[in-house]
Amino acid sequence: MSLDGKIGIVTGGTGGLGLEIARELARNGATVIITSRKKSKLQKACNIIGKNSYGIELDVIRTKSIVQFINRISKDFNTVDVLVNNAGFPFERKIWFKKVHDVTDTELLNILQVDLFGSFRVSKEVLKIMMEKRKGVIINIASTPAISGHSCGSPYSIAKAGLISMAKHIALEYGQYNIRSYSVALGDIDTQAMRKSLSKSELRKAKNENTLKRLGRPEEIAKSIVSIASENFSFSTGNTLIIDGGKVII
Ligand SMILES: NC(=O)c1ccc[n+]([C@@H]2O[C@H](COP(=O)([O-])OP(=O)(O)OC[C@H]3O[C@@H](n4cnc5c(N)ncnc54)[C@H](OP(=O)(O)O)[C@@H]3O)[C@@H](O)[C@H]2O)c1
Image (cartoon, rainbow, N blue to C red):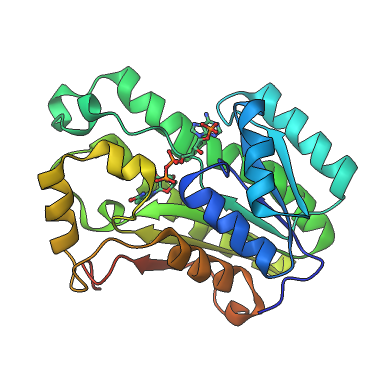
């Protein structure tokens, strides 16, 4: 699988899944741009990824930040081959366990702002570059509750379901420009953020909910995502790949 000479962006790539995806893109020959809201986190992550990695500040809820980010990308890299919309609102137990009738407008909006609107805003700008170059791949990090629903966490599921629709629209509206788009609906993946969000018994339950009886490893998710970004998936677009150890099977 070669991504030699390709330019890839991973939003929120300084830790967890984003960092693993960025590492895997780089391992396969791509030049990788990772983003963070905090400049101080970028250098450390780039040191982990290795050469051909660059860190640029980005807050996906601020239009000015997106404009500055895209200007920098255009000036320094001139193209974008792969965009992975990975940035996600941090898990908050207080919101997660609320039922629909208790969710406030602000809680809903805060999550939509990052996971959905943020990914939409960044994709809009990146699409303009990809259209000009007549190539590109956009991958959204969604989640299985967006497909199956869940007994809590409605703002998250709704935001991730929006991402699934967004990938379909991009695929259908920009296929003529040789631009592909996908969502990956992930199950429980063993990141620091995920571990921090669950109690011991919730973690045990999460492991037992899928047929493989374990959490997903960030490295294996990264491998799947980089495969989608490569020519391995050249005649597939618009769909959602479920990567969850066989919990949601459609
Ligand atoms: N782990 C799982 O089980 C799981 C399952 C399904 C889906 N997912 C999705 O996978 C993605 C990564 O999850 P993770 O577990 O690796 O969590 P994570 O470490 O918390 O990653 C989330 C990233 O989003 C970035 N971010 C947050 N707000 C942002 C903003 N306003 N602008 C730009 N970036 C922002 C953060 O970067 P900075 O703080 O550096 O800015 C952070 O690196 C998320 O979209 C999550 O919903 C995870």
